Length: 237
Figure (cartoon, rainbow, N blue to C red):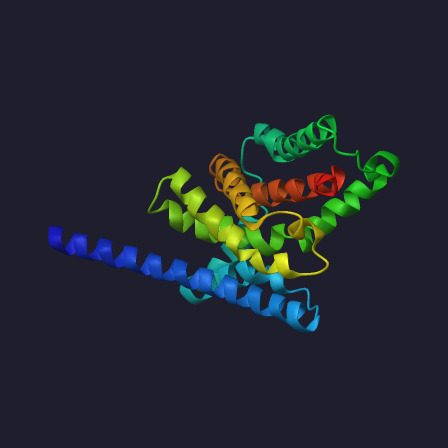
């Protein structure tokens, strides 16, 4: 029986590995094709960021059927975690980005205009726009809800975070070649990838401590992007 168990275990590992590779191929293929249309012919279809979303739900449907898709969707509404975790979810990224801006100003960079101080009402619509169309929904069902689980089945949390952070950073590369992407054009590619690795560790920390709630990382991702809107650190470079 032992050789049989070992054989079955190896087969499951191989299946998970192929499944994970399929996920990354679909996520990159979908996003890069649509981003390439924008780079070469200025065709804006606004669906490129949804590569991880499409890959996660397509593979979930193929492997687990409709029930699996419903379960994955429900995890995006999963509030079943200790509410103390709302503190880092909502305040960690504003603190990091805000302190980065303060340090830049203290070292001689000109202070940018901070819109929300004069127009605080923009925060709520900005939050909702970012959540649904600015990255989190398009990415987190895939990166954390699908890929991270499978990586952590093989590696520890830190190794999984680093691997996913590198892949996550590489996925963004086409954005560095777009005229309207000031944020990416002002940041070195290597520096950006190091940043996604750093962030990936935080994402895994949040995800693992909120019962693998996709809602938790959706909110955390939203706050990360919103923080750059509130504290425009890129404009100081």
